[in-house]
Image (cartoon, rainbow, N blue to C red; front, side, top):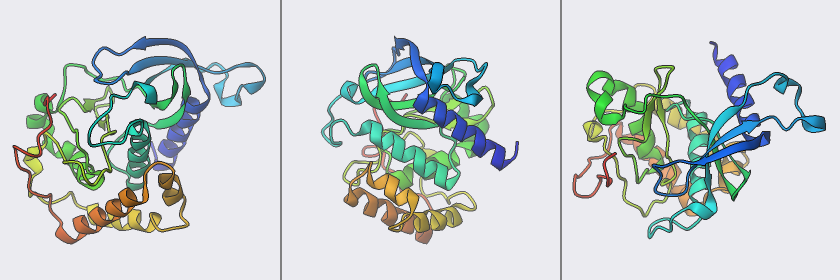
Length: 255
């Protein structure tokens, strides 16, 4: 599939996530915050979209703001906004693979609604790293950029399409939090080829007046945006991952 067709498919998924209505909902058992699985259907009637004719329901992950557990290092009820910001940055970069995500109203109020990825639930970073470690390199680099404080082993999926998908990107962008990850294999290793060029393009889009900058300004505060740009510049200059310390930079639990 060409890049243009992929982009069109993503834009269509985003529209459906935004417009389609919840038909069924169930509580996801493994979330530390309240996480729900939604079945979404087209609204029908005069609000129906021509592209929705004959479309099958889609499943999505819904994380309402009011279901977020208060944390000492992240402002309350901002995690859904940070997930959206992570998706926008990944889309601008072209890496890593991240399921389309919107912020919208839902059965329990405003929250993030993200496409559910069909995957093997028995796979995580630890079960896959020996066979496909290079495929995790874009995720590890992205986590440096967004200052991810919670990259557990289960926060990556092996999709039915065989791609690695980065999920649970909410504890991000706060420059005062500790970066935490299980991907210690990338400590002090070079970033993937093309990373610097991607980051330079991102920095251009983060300048005032650009669409991405305007969107992120509604999700993050000015301090976080400045820190994002500073980290991008540092990554370009250094060319290698920062050193990780097992007593400081490891999440708990690991999966």
